[in-house]
Every structure is written in structure tokens, then in C-alpha cells.
Amino acid sequence: MAQRYGGRHSPGQSGTAPAQPPRGGYRGARRTRVGGRVNMLFIAPLPLAFRAFLAGPVEMALNLAALGLLLLAGWLTREGLRAEEAYDARRISRRPAIPRKIFGSVLTGAGLAAAAHAAGGGVAEPAIYAVAGTVLHLLAFGPDPLRDKAAEGIDSFQSDRVARVVDKAEDYLRAMTQAIAATRDRDLEARLERFQASVRDMLRTVEDDPRDLTAARKYLGVYLMGARDASAKYADLATRAPNAEAREKYLVLLSDLEQNFTAKTRALMVDSSTDLDIEIEVLRDRLEREGVHLETTETA
Image (tube, rainbow, N blue to C red; front, side, top):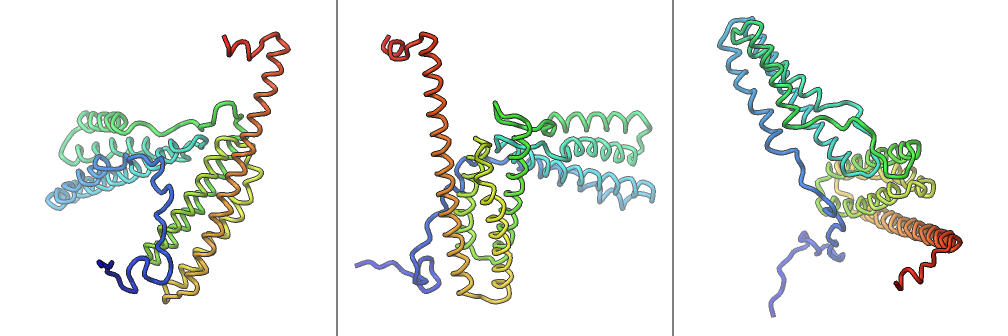
């Protein structure tokens, strides 16, 4: 009979059941726009570094300044695209505090103008390059979101409350990811992704119905803050020396938290369904008082 080869360090051979694949790790994921076009913004200005040291001191300074401006523009553009993707992924979100892509467009124009001036251009040529670079950058990458995004039928006060809580919860999740990544434990990273998927289910539920925020605030605040602190403490122990007992306790904590978040999310969804049933019944009563009989209408 054929037997599966494996050792004590192979996946699923450590005396415990094999880890389940991350649930929902890529559910609803979209292809990122932070790719080749943005990478070219870092590659295209590099010839300025060589040209800087083949010219006089003034031209060298202008070329290095142009290089710095263009690289900074590329970095701002990349961060702006990431912020825009996070904005688009949520139903309720606040606009980015800093319009990074717009600043990147302006710096691109300034960098091209400095490079043109270093090449011996007068006044007109750098100005043309500045305007063309700014406009083309905006056309290629677009502007930043300039308005807060709210769900339909929800006032701005409720939307802002939800957006603040969601932003804080995402900060906690990022901190947990960074802490566990330092341990270089791939299985643990996958287990953390499963837990984070359950947290994001709750976040989307709260965004769909901000009335659930009061019931979920403890989970998205106190519990996540505690999970972040526990992740940081475990990562500190694991990076000093392997600690199987601490790892097992951390896994148990993630399992307990995931079960609690999943159960609470289901409870929130049931409450929302109950509210919808009540609203439907109220609407039916009002229509019947107006002389509209739904049974007759549906039969017809």
C-alpha cells in the first residue's frame, strides 16, 4: 500500500490535524492596480543619476533634484493607489486624508521641469514639460477620492462613526499581520488570515447596517486591541526562541476569537433579517389600509 511521505516537520505531522485552508482569504479579492505602471515610475528616472555625474555642479544638483522629485512622485502614486483600493473595497469609507496621487502628479511635473532645465532648456521648455507631466499623470492614474463614501439611506453622522471604527479595526488587523510575519511561521500566518476573514465579515455587516455598530463595538474595539497586544507579545517570544507552549496558547486564542466573532456576526445578521421582516409587515399593513391587497395583486 502506498504511504504518504512525511516527517515530524512536514505539514500535518506535528501531532495535530492539518490546518484548514484559510477561509475566505481571497473572497471578494480584486486584482490590484499597483503593478507595472507604478513600477515604471521608479525605473524611468534612474538615467538622471548617471547624467548628474557627467555634468557641472549646477546641472548635477538639478538632475539629482529631478530624480528625487520623480521618485517621491512614484512613491506617492503607489500609496495613493493602495489607499484608493481600500476606499473602493468598503461601502462606507472616508476619503484619504492626503491626496497622494494629486501630489504625485504635481511632483512629476516639477521633476520633469527640473530635468528639462538641467538639460539647458530656457523657460518655455520646462514649463511645457511641467504641464504635460502633471496632466498625463492625472490622466494615467486619475485623481484621489475627494468625498467620503456613505451607504444609501444612511446619514453622514452614522457613516462617519462606522468609518472611524472600521479604520481602527483595520489598523489592529495590520498590526497583527506585521507582528506574526516577523515569526516567519507560514502556518500561523494562514491561521491568522482565517481569523481576520471572520473579523472582516463583521466589518462588512456593520457597514451594511450601521445600527449594528453598538452591539459590535466591543468586538471591534476591546477584543481586537487585546488580540493585537497578544500577537505582539507572542511574536516577541517567538523571535527570541521557539516556544511551542506559547504558540499553542496563541492558536487557542485565535480559535476562540474566531468562534466568538462568527457567532456575533450571525446574530447581527439574524437581527437585521428580523428588522426587515418587521418593516415588510408594516408596509403590508399600510398598503392594505390604502386598499391594496397584495394577495390579489400577486395572483393577478
